[in-house]
Amino acid sequence: MDEATKVRDPVCGMEVDPVTAPVSLQWEGQTYYFCCEHCMRRFLQDRQGK
Ligand SMILES: [Zn+2]
Image (tube, rainbow, N blue to C red; front, side):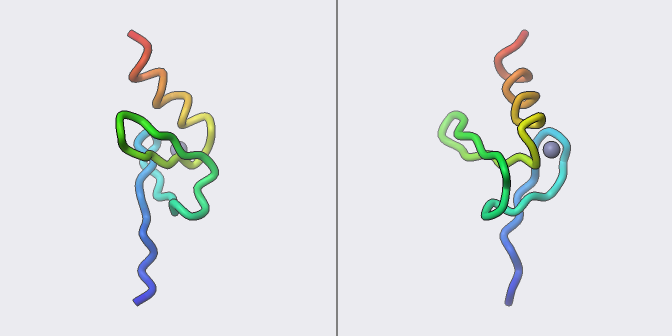
């Protein structure tokens, strides 16, 4: 079994590997992974901006 644990970038929906994900973020006790910094910024904007 070599199924890698993949998670989804919540912004663009792309699958990312937590081990190699370039960007990760701790948010309200959860860790999110993103394919790029751009997606992380959008994630934060969605939650912080009105
Ligand atoms: Zn992305």
